[in-house]
Figure 1 (cartoon, rainbow, N blue to C red):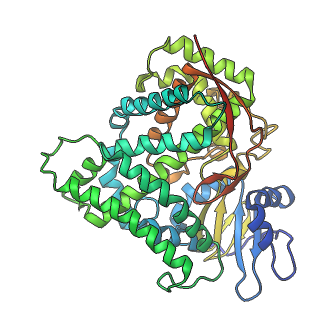
Figure 2 (cartoon, rainbow, N blue to C red):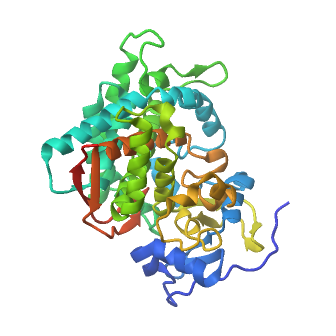
Figure 3 (cartoon, helix red, strand yellow):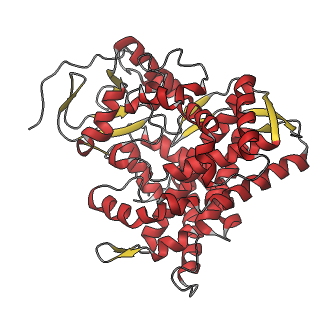
Length: 457
């Protein structure tokens, strides 16, 4: 039975005719922080002129996030305009599919992401990190942009694991295509009015050309893999495993479904990890005491050898650094849903059909869970400190039945990469402040340059 009673959500003050339109356009993350600070954990935010005004309910408490993502996940669906635009650009893969489509895809893909399977990729990840570290040494640059370089590292690592030997073709097309596709999705996803995609506007024509190029390279690699004549089990790259994924209940992926899964893995598999790694390096560069502790742990545990999957538990401080970086700079700073039926969150009424957001960017700074929240402190993630907080005070990988299937892969890659970089380099920040803005994932609006010093220890 639908719940229709409850207090009305307080509304964030805005302009009489346009609401919070310009605030959201200029600084949406800051606007959501202000909404929680001024009005509490459930806030109604309106934007746009009368007649096409959009309303979204911001849910900022850990308990509210848990209700949306886990406790009442069936009532909060990926039916909003933003997810529809992502679907149109990247297909109906694991990120955007729902209901039986999602369950079928998850069942087919889940065996590819077991801990044992993912741990087998550690050597490939380490090889890509070693290549980057050597490039830095040979270049002898005064500084490097760690966000930019971690994006390329994470992309090469996921492309190598996904495609095997077809890394360079995949990396080139993704680097050339994803920024334009992301900007197109963002622009349309948050616009109150859009012309159809097939109208021949300059923006639509540019987007269509980029989409074609992206789809063509994926389709070519998939066709080559399906026609390779390999016996089942010959290839260990993820694409081969996707091609071979099959069950009596769920069948297998057709060519379009394969492309959709590949695009989702390329998007989610590199941008999220790149954000975590890049900001971990940036934050360590700003904090010499924490950097010293991380160096000491890496030197003591690894003693100069290349880390593997078995070292993750032996590097707790490196892991804490990454978790704190993900707290301050979550790759998915805002997560949207649409309510099917009316409900209540924190005693506040949420009407049927309402657009709802939960916001790691805000919850990760909530004063009820985080003292001096803007301060970088990896000790927030000791086992004792984690156990003392609500489960959804920190949720960079989402949560509930739609939690990111690649969580272990992301942590494996991040710990190995950060440990190897700490082995080889000391670094200090050139850019002390890095402005950010939300896109499909969190994006830096400026560089995060660090001076590198090769270590002799």
